[in-house]
Image 1 (tube, helix red, strand yellow):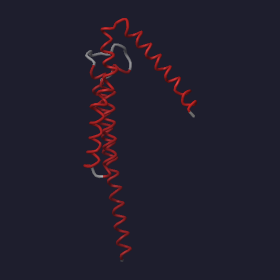
Image 2 (image 1 turned 60 degrees about the vertical axis):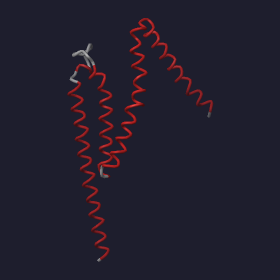
Image 3 (image 1 turned 90 degrees about the horizontal axis):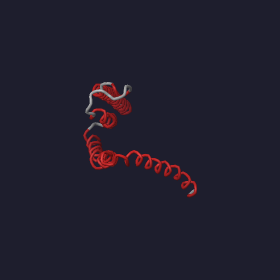
Image 4 (image 1 turned 180 degrees about the vertical axis):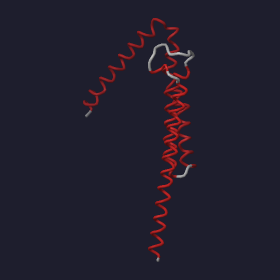
Length: 152
């Protein structure tokens, strides 16, 4: 088993080493300018672990305690998807230039796309939460009817 794990780790380490070599080839010729790249690569995980992950955990706990049971999962999934969509759109929203340098996926209106996608997520959350609430109420009514019939 240890041999199999070792053999599985080798390609990963080789890919990591190759990535470091490629980054050094990119960064070494323009070192003062590439410092911002190092900060970007290292800062993202640090900010995520120090700020966003704890906030997401606290928000999830609060939502689990405040919301009624049928709404907990849809709202938590909607909040998670909203955060992920925001993370994915952030580099495109942050850009200083108005038009993407290369045509393709990035030349659309990022704000509009993000807002429409988040709206679609929350419409799905509302529909799912409503459906779960209706289903839960019907199940309670059936249980109440069965209890009344059994007591008669």
